[in-house]
Length: 239
Image (cartoon, rainbow, N blue to C red; front, side, top):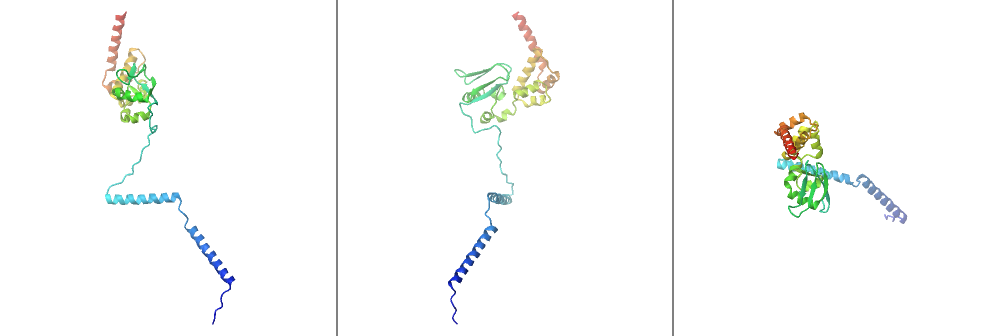
């Protein structure tokens, strides 16, 4: 029995249905398997990292630590040589800071808390030339970047600021703990401030005097009495 060939219209109709059907399958496939967004990829990457870390811990029998970088405030990329840096004197008498012994540049401070803007290129030389002054806290660099670059962060943990010294002199609640925090050279500076107050007959808290004398092992009142006696002798000689 001979099969009649399909008409052209029927063939075209079947092809259209097949194409439509295939399109529906592709569309359905796209809906069922959406593309992964960035968040999903990140989650998968983190999951893989956790799996790898666990495997490493199991193999090494030791905990694995992920190092975190601590961001320090006020620290920037660098300091330019021609940039001015603010520096403060923490002495009660005249302080001279020179770039070198002879022929250099000298910056002079006349009183406690006085500040000057010093060229960074000069300050580098000053820090080298007056290394002992820097470590003692006779002058204070008011720029965290410079302190960090000079490698003095650890030293500065034991150097008091102007405000902290004033808290001691005013016998605030934390006066003793601040005094004990400071280095020996700065303690001597604070004791001189107190002796100066006694000599000049300024108001002084004798409870503070007693606490600092015990903490430092220095007879502050005795030193003050000697300073008063020397002052009286000098006065008599001049008159």
